[in-house]
Amino acid sequence: MVAGVKIDPRAKQTEGQSQQNDKGRARAKVAQKTGVSEAKVKRAQAVKNKNAELADAVKQGAMTLAQAEKKVKEQERNEKRAELAQAGAMVKPQDRWNVWQADI
Image 1: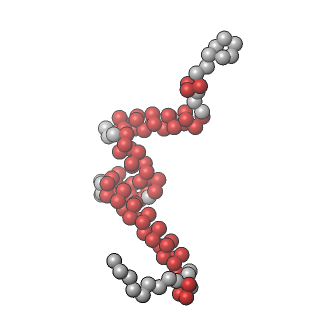
Image 2 (image 1 turned 135 degrees about the horizontal axis):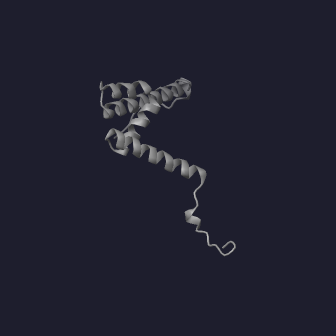
């Protein structure tokens, strides 16, 4: 209580929170303007952030948003696999663990 005024700590917003709220409102405006859901706008923005070429293909109608999301996930998987393969290739053959026989 400051000078007779009670301040509700839940009512305070930090600058980051207000920016998030602004983004949410902007997303809602774009969704309303284009006639799609906010979730679809968010998904489209995620695709655009990860691969702008796929976002352009979706915009032109060459592929659906779901297809673009699948391609983005596939690209991410392939990148992770390449990193793992590179890390595995760095291990000397004599330091690798060999399985001679295994029971299932």
